[in-house]
Length: 110
Image 1 (cartoon, rainbow, N blue to C red):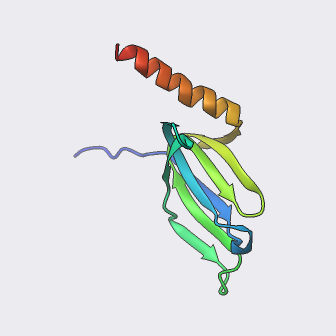
Image 2: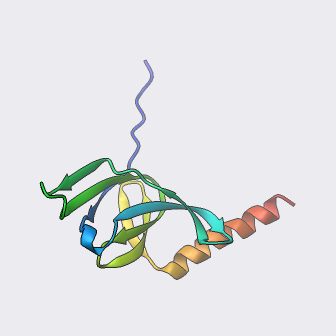
């Protein structure tokens, strides 16, 4: 019998307030010439909204990586996930990591 592998991930609750814009979470997948970062938008695993749908939380499960999070009325921020730990990181740190990886990969392919 094969032993189960457990994948550690983070559950993130993002405030849902449609009057302030749409909440979303996107994984940064690499550099992009038009938008600076290539992104894959995450699907919510749950929505805990009021009966009117005007407030509440949208829940996402995130695995290892760097994410951009948009929170209505508060704007965007970056989040780094490693296992079951998450921490906010600066845009500069994200840029350095994403573009450094591209530079390293370019050198490896030569």
